[in-house]
Length: 80
Picture 1: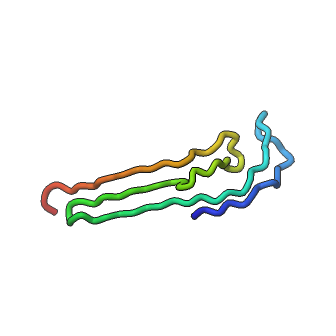
Picture 2 (picture 1 turned 90 degrees about the vertical axis):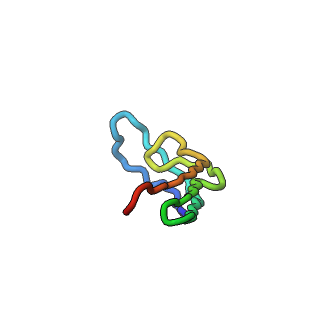
Picture 3 (picture 1 turned 180 degrees about the vertical axis):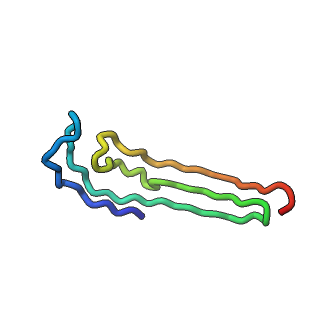
């Protein structure tokens, strides 16, 4: 879990022509699971932002990504 507090302390100086705006607090839940099939194969699943929370990181003017999921399979070939 990621707990991020609101950021409302805006610096008095501007960075270039960009306007700095405060960001709201948010909480993200990420999940990761790994299953070892055998000595040569591992399956993993990763889910980021499980509840598809809309948020914006401080100093970033664009919204951050929502829910994303990945599935991976690692295989080892040959002798070790």
